[in-house]
Every structure is written in C-alpha cells, then in structure tokens.
Image (cartoon, rainbow, N blue to C red; front, side, top):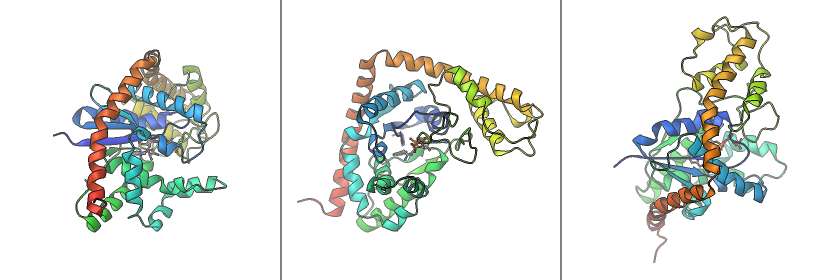
Length: 324
Ligand code: ATP
Ligand code: LTN
C-alpha cells in the first residue's frame, strides 16, 4: 500500500507564487509516489471573516488552481474540508487533549491575534483543526511551506499525547519541505513572508496575475542599493528574487546571475516567473470553462475520503470510551 500524503490551502485571498513554490509545485512533484489527498481548508479560512459569496467562489477557484498547478485528479484526491464532517468532529476530540499553553505558543496565533481587535477562538483552535485534517487520514507525509513547520510539530505532539493517553491510534506525520522556495518573502518587504492576507499591491505575485502586472511588481521589488548582484553578500530582497527565479527555472543559479545589474537581473526573474505561470494560467482558463468538471472532481474526492475519515473518527471515539 502507498503511504498517504495530506496537505491543504485556505481559500482566502488570492493564491500567490509563495503558495505555488512552497506547496502546490511540491505536491504535483510527489503525488505519483503516494496516495495523495489535497484539501481546500474552508473551515480554516473562516477563522477570519470571509464574505460568504466570495468564499464560495474562492473554494472553486482554489480547486481549479490545484489542477492548473499540476495536481492530477486521476491520480490524487481533491476535496473540500467542510464537506467531510469528521474533520470538525475529530478536532473537538483532539481539543480535549491539547493544553492551552501549546496553542498560545504558536507563532501564527501570536501574529494573527495581534492584527485583530477581537480575537476569535477559531484563531487559537486553528492548529488543532489542522492536526485533525492530517490525523484523520493517518497521513505519514505533509508537504508544506516552512511557515507550517511549527504546526506540524504541534500535530505530532497532539498525536503522541493522544496515543499515550488512549493507546496507539494515530500515525505520526512527517513534514516535507521543498528544497527551494520553502519561504518566499514579500516583494515590498523581504523581511515578511509573502502572504495572501497581507495588503499592498506590490506585496505578492498572484498566480493569476497578468504577465504585465508580474513584470511591474518584480521591477518595483524592494532591494538594497548595491548596483549589481554579488553572490557573496546578497541583501534579503535580491536573495528572495533569486530563490523565486531558481524555483521557477533551475538553470538560474547564483553563478549565472553574478555581476548582473539589478535592472537586468529583475528582467530575468520576471521572465522566469512569467514562463512558469503561463501554462498554469492557460490550464486554469480551460478548467473554469467547464464548471461541471470541477464539481465532479470534488465529488469524487469527497466520496473517496469519507470512509477513511469516518473510520478514524470511530476508532478515536472508541479509544476514548465514547461508545455504548
Ligand atoms: P494567509 O496569509 O491567509 O495565512 P498564506 O499565504 O500563508 O495565507 P495558506 O493557505 O495559509 O497561505 O498556505 C498554503 C500553503 O502555502 C502552505 O503549505 C504554506 O506553508 C505555503 N505558503 C504560504 N506562504 C508561503 C510562502 N511565502 N513561501 C512558501 N510557502 C508558503
Ligand atoms: N494551516 C495551513 C493550511 C492547512 C494545512 C492542513 C496544511 C490546514 N490544514 C493540513 C497541511 C495539512 C496553512 O498553510 N496555513
């Protein structure tokens, strides 16, 4: 039997090149070796307010982007988190074995809580629901960007604690980071992670941005004031652009860009990104031209994962004595 892979993306905001290089591209590369489940985590998205009509459109857009980025629905399962009730049910069972201190320590919680006037409980519970997403499928591999490493550690801690309290129930999942592109930074501020929820027109390259827009954003990206690329002392902005270019086109390396003037270097980066996204955007347009196709893919994914999820929930409840 193939080992199982599970990962997810929130259908909030516009998916960007960080999501692609940190997650989707890696998923597409490893999918044939595993039984892969890719989840649109809409229950995570609503931990911050989402406009209902926009959210429902974003769920479909995200599914289409998974496929456009190379997830093959004939090979992998694509599903929407809220359509499988076991995720929320298991999250509650796991909540009951999770010490509050573990949740308060999460970096993402601290950052998101600081951005809001009223901090919803969902922001705190977020990583427990994520643990449920993973443990419900007994996934052994979770391909994510570096920002999720801490949540993965917490998932293992929760699984371990549950297993030691109630007996072996969950498989221990391993984190799988991409070799390049695990942490793409904002173009406007290379000290901040590129993020869907960050505001600012020049912050992120959206996967569906027009080539002209991509070019403009990269040409305006924040760099230091050196005249040319020096591989021995690259500032954060230049290092970030190089990571983006390398992940899009592996023939671009420190050596090939050494000595290039920043303007020329940025043109090279823009060309690599545009060339990488062009087939993805074309495929996205084809997929969205046929809404019936997407619905069928999501239905098939749900039907495949539902019994697996149900089985784990039953096993977990049984282990805790929740049966008569
Ligand atoms: P938000 O800002 O709304 O929290 P996000 O941009 O962080 O969203 P998610 O849906 O939370 O996006 O993340 C989906 C996947 O993309 C995760 O595997 C995450 O690690 C990865 N990812 C997100 N941002 C980056 C980034 N800047 N670089 C590399 N990977 C990233
Ligand atoms: N928290 C993740 C999204 C996510 C996820 C998951 C990733 C929710 N459930 C399960 C991997 C496995 C994020 O990227 N912000």
